[in-house]
Image (cartoon, rainbow over all chains, first blue to last red; front, side, top):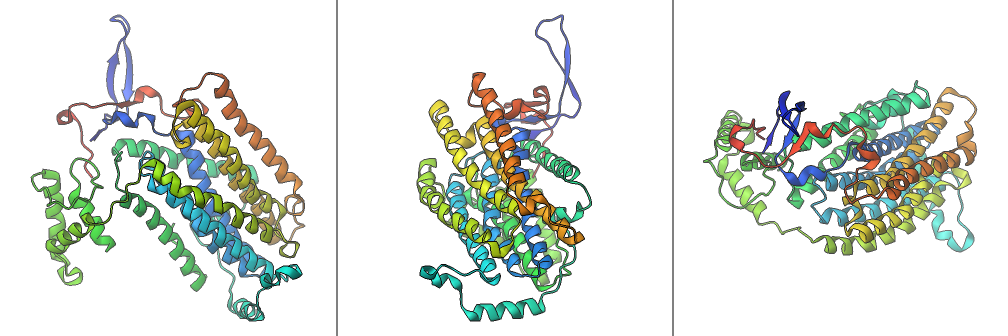
Length: 240
Length: 244
C-alpha cells in the first residue's frame, strides 16, 4: 500500500530547538524497497535499451541507403537481443526477485547472438563474400541469391516513421553532442518515472514469474509486430 | 486471451498489484475489488454481443491460470540454467562480428567497434561479479555501485554503435565523404578507451572509499533527496491509497 504525501510538511528535530522542515514526496510502506536502484543505475539501463532500438532503426535505414534489404534482416536478428535487454530490466523492476528471468535472459542472448550472426552472414553473402574453400558450405546457394534480387525489386524506400528507434531520424539534424544530450534527458525522465513510480505504486516484491514474462513478451511482440508492419507497408509509422 | 488476463489481474487486485493469480474465488468483500468488478461487469454487459463473455468465463480462466506450473526457481537453479547459455553465446557473437566486418560489406568500422565493445563489457563484468560475490555474498545485480559501473559499459557499447552508425548514415544521406569513424577503427577505439576509463573510475573511487553492498552508484547523483522518500509500514487507515 503506497501513500503520497504531497507537500506534507513534517518537522523532524534532532533536538527540541532545531526544527528542520522537509517535504515527503513519496512514502513507500515496504521497507525492503529502500535498496532499489539509484536513478543513475536506471539511466544506464534505460539508455542501453533505447540506444539498442535506435541502432536497430539505423540498420533498417542503412538497408535503404545502401540498397541492400539484407541489412533489414539485421534489425530482425537483433530483436531477441533487445528482448534480452527488456528481460534484464524486468528482472530489476521486480527488485531482482524472479530468478527464472536470469535464465530466460541467457537463453535470449544465446538465440539473439545466433540470429545476429545469421543476419550478418546473409549480408556478407549478398555482398559477394566467399568463404575459404574448406568452409564452402558457408557460401549459400544460388537460389538464395535469386531471392535477394526479387526482394530488392519490390523494396521501397521506407519513409521516416515514428518510434524509439526513430529517435535517430527525429534528431538527425542535431550534432552528436546535442543528440546525446537529448537522448540522455529522455532516458533520465523515464528513469524517474520507473524508479519513483514503482515505489509510489508499491510494485510487488514477491512477484509471479508469469507477470515477469508478460512484461517481457508484450513490448517484444509489439516491437516485432511493428517491424513486420513496416516491412509490409513502408509507410507504416508505428505507435511507439 | 490478453483481455482476459487484464480483467483477471484487475479483479484479483486486493491491497496492491495482485500478480499472484491465485486459484481462489474473488474476494468481493474488498470494496475496491467489488467496485472494479461491478464496473467491469457493466462494461461487459454493454458489449455483450461483441465480447460474448461473462464472469464465469473469467473465473474459469482464472482457475486455469492458477493451475499453471510454478516457474519459481531458486537463484541458484536459475544461474545453473543460465550458465551454459551465456557460455555458448560467445561463439555466435564472434561469428556475428566476423561476418559483419568482412570487407565486402563496407560496414562502417566504428559500428563494428561498437558491437565488439560488447565483449569488453562481458569480460569486465566478470571481476565485478566476483567482487560482489566475494565481498558481499550477493549477485552483481544486488550491489548498486558495482552493478551500475559494470552495466555502464553496455551503455557505452550501444552508444558507440549508435554514434558511429549515425555519422555514417548522415554522410551517406547527404552524399558527403564518409566520416573517419566509418573508414578507420581509430576514432571509436579511442572513444571506447576513454569511456572505459571513465567507467573504471566510477568503480575505482568507491572501491578505495570503503564501499558497502548498497553504496549508491555515482553517490546517488540525481536521486531525490533522501528526506523526500520514506519507507516503512504505517497505518493504512490514515494514508491516501493509490488503488490499482
